[in-house]
Image (spheres, rainbow, N blue to C red):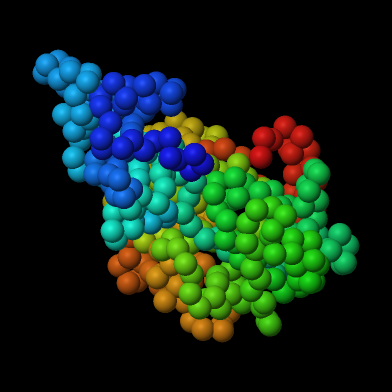
Length: 350
């Protein structure tokens, strides 16, 4: 957070000084962090703390320790864990100081910003040949086919970056050099883009195993040829709140039966009658969140699909959940899909 020093007040200040500084912040629920002469965190003070103190006959000329909160919450990293973020959210905390082992304040986190980001790394599968889109893919890899003003994969990369994902891996094979040439190292987009070279087709997750060490505890994997406005933030929050090992984004399909449907028992007796019922089924949307450690169940240097991993995790008793996509989703696999995407993009806010 820029200008975080504005949120620091010296422990020698009085309550009147704190009120002036809080007013200068211009925030409804502002907070100041109390530090000693060496810059070590001691506590915090808010407008509410001061009001409660005044009701207990504290004077505005009294030192701030008469109304401050000692100690206060803090973290040791600018990348707090999901558990820490959840705890802060439950307490409606917005600003959290970052300190070192000596309790020196290193900066202030604005959790309102962090809550709009998802602390994950992403792997986009971009190695397919796109044979059903020939001749368009004869000289252009499918992920680089334009939908509106930019390639399919760029829509997904930009949305991930807008959600705070700044370390992205692209798994490439067919005409992969063109994808590498297009995005480079990601510097122009303010992110780091790395490349996973597939020497042979490795399925929808096999290539993700080639990265030896991911830096985040959670991983987002998605197909690069999907056009969607999925809320990655809600996707991630649901995954964390349910403490899942893996979450599979899903698309609902409705099947309307034009006739009355009879339900029978084991003796073929009619148990009930449903008039023109609608049945809802959920299909895999090609977007996944998982604990990075789940990749331990993916074999090294082999063809392996996400569906294989899902079956493996179910067999191991892991917790798998679904996240229904309520907005737009389109898998651009056929020429008709590509034509539809060109029309739909005119009305989408991606």
